[in-house]
Amino acid sequence: MLIAESPVQAKGISRDVAQASVLRGSSSLLSQIGNTPLLDLSDFVRSLGVPAGVGIYAKAEWLNPGGSVKARAALRIMEEAERTGKLTLGKVLIDSSSGNTGIAYALLGAIKGFDVHLVMPSNVSRERKALVKAYGAVLIESDPLEGSDGAIRLVRRLVAEQPERYFYADQYNNAANWQAHYASTGPEIWQQSEGQITHFVAGLGTTGTFVGTGRYLKDRKPSVELIAVQPEDELSVIEGLKYLPTAITPGINDDKLADEQLPVTAEAAWEITRRLSREAGLFVGFSSGGAMAAAIEVAKRLESGVVVTLFPDDGSKYVSLGIFD
Image 1: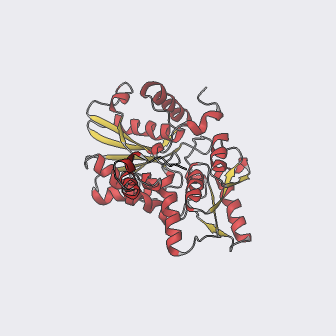
Image 2: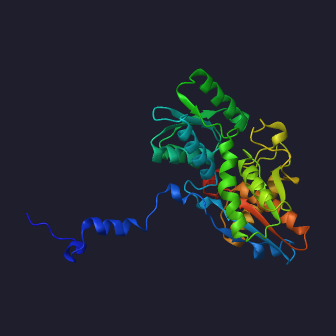
Image 3: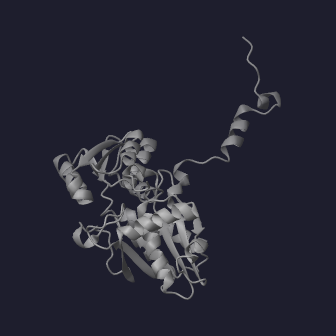
């Protein structure tokens, strides 16, 4: 049988050399986590009352593998657990999640070869359930009326019943969560803003993004003001954000870090989310809209400054909720 030569063989180039040439420009999926762009939204906010001397910028975190900022924390949590021997082949990674962290765990589990079990409230969107299953994770649904706190209580019970089976990632209390942002998100914002940042605005969920990024920015520039965003009360539902006064408080939270706690209504978050899609071409999730609404309020008070916020994910995982209709 005659086997045709490849173009590289015909030119006298060995297959190994050709393969090395191709691989030199490639990278692993894990290496694509982080280094997201900082988007200039200053023109978008001018019609909303933000003075000309103030710039507003947002980190486009949906460009991470898995589609959200949570890829950063999930990777750090898993790699630290591997390093310390808490997560080994044969152990099942388990955690509670309302969506994005769970999706990130599932994706990373598929890459690294770990079984992943996720406890989510049963009323999370169909898209989020479908994604974790697509990556091969086992989905365990908790009481929808108990929200994310109910999922936390259920996962704790499962781990208590079979402690040898599970590695409990515990994103709400795992220091690797905020450390991921101290090591990546904070330095990226500092470099991309060329140190000109004056205000950092971010929503609170696990609090890892705000705590890690905020600590880094304060270490570099103590004058940077840190604004933490929460729903205005426990009845204001903004996907991805928690009203901490009535929720299980994350162990990694730092009450003394924020210069200001800024409440946002669900209506304001929805309105800005829709406007970002229709006027700026940015189809983002509702926690992004909440963060942007808060950033606009902060910017309106200023005569000059650089306000940076963070868009945790895009809107694709929320379409079935019907809010974009």
